[in-house]
Length: 406
Ligand SMILES: *[C@@H]1O[C@H](CO)[C@@H](O)[C@H](O)[C@H]1NC(C)=O
Ligand SMILES: *[C@@H]1O[C@H](CO)[C@@H](O)[C@H](O)[C@H]1NC(C)=O
Ligand SMILES: *[C@@H]1O[C@H](CO)[C@@H](O)[C@H](O)[C@H]1NC(C)=O
Ligand SMILES: *[C@@H]1O[C@H](CO)[C@@H](O)[C@H](O)[C@H]1NC(C)=O
Ligand SMILES: [Cu+2]
Image (cartoon, rainbow, N blue to C red; front, side, top):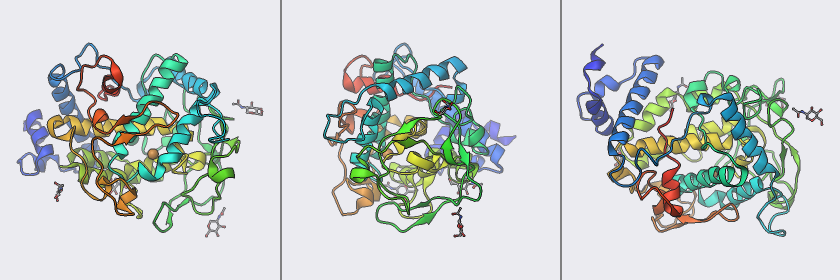
């Protein structure tokens, strides 16, 4: 096959520049070829990443790598699941009176996400905010619940044809709980994000309560808040106490359509952060919801389908682990430029899709974590590998969320 004549360096160059002759060899011919190409590019990125280690901070000794959920051993998955359950059993740090529905340490994270939903999506801080959010969750699992591993991620395309059977959702004791019980004839969710008309999504293969796996019988305390047509907010606008069961509607339709190998290849080939964001998050107010929205609505249900309280489903964190992994891989192709590049398109502002019109986000902008954990700034979490990789808040994020593991 001619493609093997293309060296790794040339393929990387081709990824970075549409003009290199190897580009034509990157053009997919079938889904199998696309997958091969994705792995070829990721291998090239890993090689470049390893070559750069030690130049500006992390070394091969002190860097750590996150791993794909299905690549963890059963006992490693169980350790992760038990740490999440531990967080769900610890008391909240949010003071009484702020939100009656915030009962557990886990809920602290959900509350922070609710409070910031409208200034952390389709905004210039989106990726940075969620990077720090996932990092602090990982840190809470480790520091407060004795977890020894790192936050695993959900490799979307790997399970796109049957996410309900994946190690994440298959309902075995090592999963994040099963799909919701199948509700015959149920319709897909109609989403209604801020500032846009309703979008009808296809249904998944569940729709009801999760009855299998470690999170069967899990209690959701906060919400609903909004974003789904026909669903009324819970008490106190969703901040009140509203205990109910976990529901999901996992299925392949949205996964195949929005988070397949072609999507990954598309992300890896985007020349700048503005273009990357438009594929990653989709086009606000349309059915193009990108792998970000796609992944959320593969989980769907309650709280997974409500954009404010979506972190209330334990699968949120593997989804955003993958969001961060993709961004980190993309950054690693050209760290000098991409670790500092800020989006200057419609998603580069401090309001949702720049509505109402607002200034561009800046590296000095604070990433506020409320009661979930310490706040930081956009600039401090932009790189996962620079800094001394030793102590302090800034190095903490660098030390852990590095994303080229199995
Ligand atoms: C699904 O939508 C169709 C068409 O709007 C409607 O007739 C049907 O009753 C709905 N099914 C359920 C279970 O709500
Ligand atoms: C869920 O709760 C019900 C009722 O309390 C109980 O019978 C069932 O065994 C529980 N399931 C799991 C998986 O914990
Ligand atoms: C794969 O995802 C891309 C968007 O990233 C989409 O355009 C394409 O239609 C999807 N493929 C399938 C088979 O749905
Ligand atoms: C990003 O790349 C696209 C080409 O895909 C180009 O049209 C656009 O001008 C670039 N934007 C910036 C800000 O460089
Ligand atoms: Cu979010």
